[in-house]
Structures are given as C-alpha cells and as structure tokens.
Image (cartoon, rainbow, N blue to C red; front, side, top):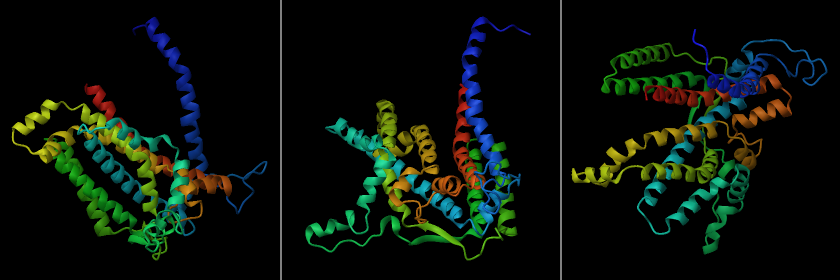
Length: 374
C-alpha cells in the first residue's frame, strides 16, 4: 500500500475541520430533523412540547402520510399546489424576460451600462424590501389600481394578492394520476431524445419505465382515497402578484447570466450562419440558444431553489393567514414555532428539502460526470 506524501497529509489535515463541521452542523442536523419528523413531538393531544420531560414516541412516516392524505392538513396541500404553480410561472417569467433584456443589450445600444445597472438594481434589495414596496403597489384600494384616476378614469378593481379566483382546478385525490401523466410524458420525451442521439439503451429503459407507469396509473387509477373528494385545488390568481414581484427582483440576474453567455459566443459563428443563409431568427434558434443551454440550466437550478423555499417575500406581502398565496415555508414556521408542533413542522421541512434536492442533485451528478469525462 503506497504511503501518503507529506503534501497529501497536509491537505487532509486542512480539510478535516471543514468536513467535521459539515457533517455535524449540516448533515447531522438534517438527520435530527428527519428523526423528529418521525416522532409525535408536539402533538397537542399529549404532553406540552416544551415541557421539561415531554413524551416523545417514534411513529414512523405517519406525519408525512397525514400531510398528504389527512383531512386536517388542507393548508399544506394548498401550499404544495401554490409552490408548484409559483415555481413554473416564476422560472418562465425570469428566463423569458432575462433572455429578452440580454438580447436587447447585446445589440450594442447606447447607454448600455446604465440599462445594465437599472435592470440589476432590484437584485440588490432584500425580499423584505421588495415585498413591502409591492404590497403598497398592489393595495386593492390604492397603488396601481389608482393609476387610471390620474387621467380622469375610474380606479381599477383588481384584488391582486387577495384574489380568490382559481384557474385549472382539479381534485387532490387525482394528483397521483396527474403526476404520473407528467412523469410519463417526461420519460417518453427523454427516450425519444436519447434514441435520436444514438443512446438506444437509455431510450429503451426510459421508454419501458414510461409505458409501465402509464399502464399502472391510467388503468389502475390509484387515488388518495382518504382525502375528501370535494377538496379542490388550482392556480390561485393571487399567486400572479407574487410572481410579478419576484420576477421584478430576479429577472435582472438572469439577464446578467444570459448577457455574459451571449458575449462569450464568437461573432464568427453568427457570421458563418448568416453566410449560409440563416436569418436572425434562425441564428438564435440554431446557433445561439443551443449554446446558452448551460446558462439556462444554471439559472433554472438557482431560481428553482429560491422559489421552492421562498418565505420572506410572501410573508411580507400577504401575511401568514392568506391561504391564496401560502407556501410551505410559512406553514412550517407557524407549525413549528407558533404551534410548537415540532414533529409536523420538521416533516414539512423535510418535504421542502426533498423538493430542492430533486432539482439540485441531478444537476450536481451531471456536473460531476462532466468533470470526470473532461
């Protein structure tokens, strides 16, 4: 067995304290939170959570089952639906607006530095400041609704973040089928792409899994049967006001990322495409946008991480009792630190961790494989 060199021992000793701190204060606390989520600590039917010797029993996954399937956890399911819709709309708005602003600035416009500063300025603010400002702007009896009065017109009657209108409604018991359909479509699209890129083995595996899931969920039609069938959810129109405020703050960030990517593309590639007969749309469609895919992926990871754990913007804009825009972060805070139901609060925190991991872990694996191949 080869002996480690002095430099290798020095490197190991230097990183050991960081590894120990990471193991204790990150993964150790995650493990403690997971264990707490599998207990009944804070159950109002038992001893007080902050008693000197509280009665704590291990109950396994019951808290998680109650969150997704219990009749008393309607708020958590509203939060999950709100988070999904908010994430989709927030990502689409930030990526689309950021790319548009970057393309416009890439045209060598006069005063480009001023525009860059203006577009990036909102990012220097905290979500608390942003939420306060947009709460004033979205006040139902003031703010933007009063703009028409400046020209003698009656004020608008938009409800903004207190709007109770629901779009695309569905029943919670049908969520497994909806999720399965989306998963199957994703697998089949991946299988088709893998087949086109000569990865037949990956294509066959993805196709078989997708067809199997399609048969199970569409024929078997499993449902969350314990939930009342009248429990309906959908896209709350009030979420659009939160999306607008968050997009105003973060679109400048995606603009900066896309602009850096555009400036890194050699002009010779564009000229070669134009010489081959491509118009400007085709240059962007077939040359520039494919080269910006790594930028897009990085932006999706960062913005998705922000949207899934958002708390302060929603709390400041709409408070902690507005279920139309409620998110898991607020629910976890109220459950754990207001109601002292630590076990259910920990379960909500673990669900949030899993949602973030679903986005970040595949990205990290892909980055690791890319570095290994390089």
